[in-house]
Length: 239
Ligand code: ADE
Image 1 (cartoon, rainbow, N blue to C red):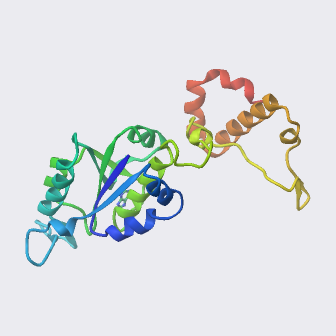
Image 2: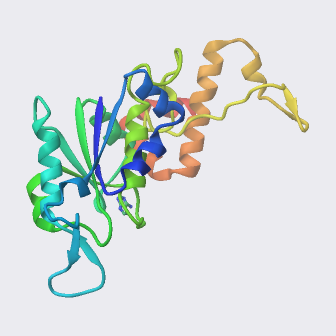
Image 3: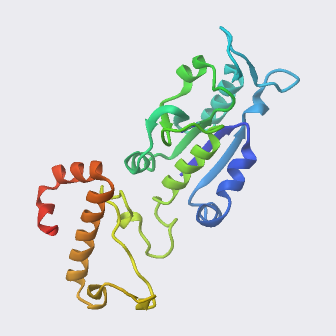
């Protein structure tokens, strides 16, 4: 899968995603990351990409022309038109569900705003999806873009190490993940739950399911309600 990020700060994207698991995914060729500098598409000799807002008010706005040209340059290099995701606090809130949906795309163009935003006319012209990463405001769309790219990348087969799968993650099945334990068996007088040492896989699975449900009910009652409506039979796991 290829991510094409339209940004004024390409080095931020490259450095932020170039290490660890996402960096390895790129080296292995499982993920392509292309940071496109919007400033390279400024049509004026000063390479200016922002201007004052009509109607007044504080702050500068990213102008339509360089954003449009940068986007069209990327689209023209693709076999079929890609979805264009604009990172904005006004978008629909990003979820694991949305990540799964976008992981099915071959190419994704992600547009990062800065300053006070982007001229509405180019957004109307090129954007297919608007995504927020939560109800708070960042200085630009780069960190949100990295959040989205990281989340999608780890769903691509082969990105997580040998045999490790994203299937048991929190949210993948609509529930939070169960607690996990490693060695030693007792730490600061706290033993690992005995059932995990029993070797009885069916019992372990059942215990984990119960823990998942209890945890979700306690910490995210909204998710729990939704899950129980869709899986009424899950009642049997929880005493
Ligand atoms: N840009 C600024 N704040 C943002 C947010 N919360 N989500 C996505 N893009 C943003």
